[in-house]
Length: 86
Figure 1: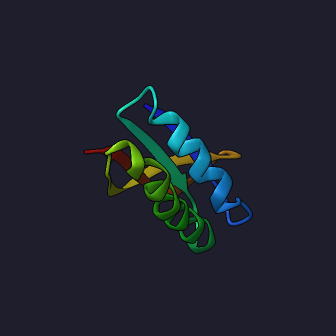
Figure 2: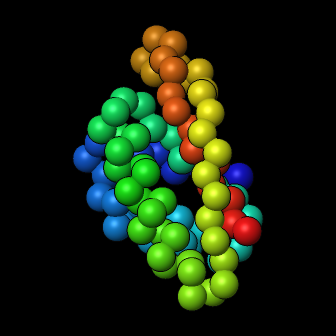
């Protein structure tokens, strides 16, 4: 499964395009976000991507989960959003 890392500075339209493009060949994508701003951009991206894939007859579902990651030797908790097509 592909992992897209989203920050608070990510552009939702760009992330949505990457999501929609990934669904051409895969059934699911994981989005990783650390912090409230990044999570906000990720959710907006999923909503926009849903509109991109709707004409193909697909719908998106989102499964939120926690993920422990290491950044610069420090353990952090990230939110991962598992996005799949129906």
